[in-house]
Length: 272
Image (cartoon, rainbow, N blue to C red; front, side):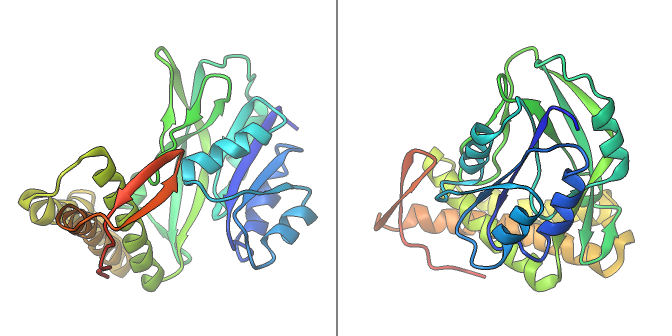
């Protein structure tokens, strides 16, 4: 075992969490699950695999990941999602690290799947993220969506051998639903920080994103799945600026509490 705590945020992940925590057990005796009121067997499965499960209210992706970090036994944190599985090469790399420099963070490459198909091209085929870090120097931003890690000046970044395998969506329906979900969250975030919608963002940005994913990044080589990913990436871009335009145009009707900030926004008429 290595001095790393694995932190996972979940809600109703019973169909995928078993494989994730089984591989995580190969590196650590401390797997922290921050559960947001699952109604399936997520908590039961995680507990059977020796995880420590904490029920926490949902305050956003970054905020709940920080809650998990606070519950961890070790200072080094490997942050993954329930639908992400570390592979044996990454397990070996983690066992060979010295964990003696809190000013270094570790980038990990991803292999992302559409159903059971590995996506080799497009933006999904180029995916990588910093997921291993020391909690004394690094934490998650507490934004409603697209949370990022906050690094102090002078942080060094290294890339580990191995991959995290991300089982992103099961089918086209889930791909569409995710595009809409994250578009709504992004629109609310943009509205709060004062970002504006305009013609270029509404119409040219979606077209550019499609061409970049499908043509420039060779997404067409992934076949039908590559087409679906490029299409829904463009759709996500259009939706977030469309809903941002709605927010800008309507009177404030509703409030919600997220990430310790009070967000004021109009009631959006959802476009799918």
